[in-house]
Image 1 (tube, rainbow, N blue to C red):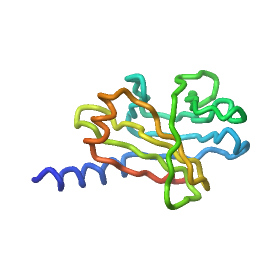
Image 2: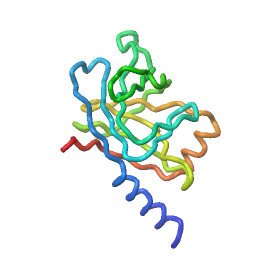
Image 3: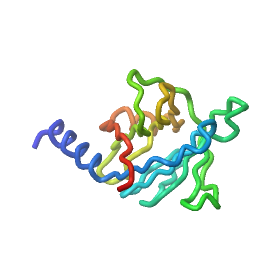
Image 4: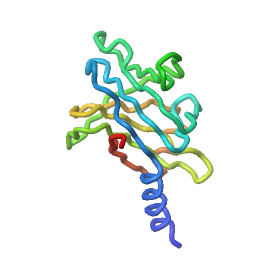
Length: 149
């Protein structure tokens, strides 16, 4: 099977394997989102979030901060503080959108970006130069959140 066909099929499989649940939008200022992953997901700092549920929210949004806080499902423990850059999308969605990259068959998918619902500006996670290169060479996948059933 050629590389492009394999990459396309891997992307489809990856999109089907991820289950993302949008969070309650009680306070849109901090963009709090409850996300559930059915597969491990790599985040900056060579960290991997095991399959499970996490909260992503902006830290100090009133100050213009570009730091995303990742917490456990109960919001009792902060697991990571991640620096981001702004990124734009051309089509605004009513659902959370995650941009992922499949950088290797052996490594978990990498979280590249996060868009809060109804916003055109999202958060691109900052990685090392070496990891950025792998992300660019990997297969990109966009996943739109599916509400919990």
